[in-house]
Length: 100
Image (cartoon, rainbow, N blue to C red; front, side, top):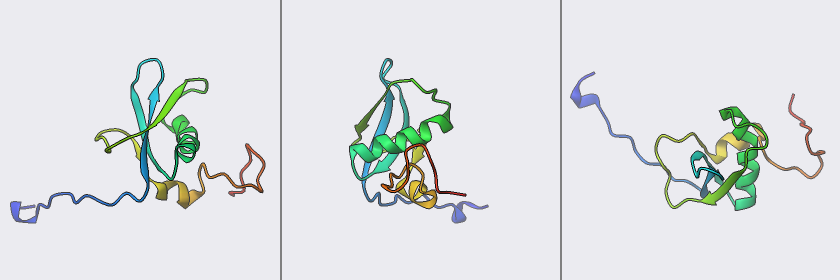
C-alpha cells in the first residue's frame, strides 16, 4: 500500500442520541449505545453489558453523551435492529425470545 492509497476515515451520521453506561462506584465508562431515548438506552445497555463481562448486579448509570469517545465498545442502533436485541415487544413475555 502506498501513501497515495491511504485515506482518512470519514465520520458517519448517528441518527439518534449517544448514551454511555458508567460503573456507579468508579465512574468508569464501559460502553456506548445509540438509542432514541434514555429508556431505550437502558434497555440496550442491559442487553449488551453481559457480552462485555459485566456481571449481573453491577450498578450501571446511563447518561446522554455529547460526543462519541474513541476506544470504548460502541453499539449502534443497527446492531439492535438487526437481531431485535434488547427491543421491547409488547406481545412477548419478559425474559423470552422469539428468535430461533
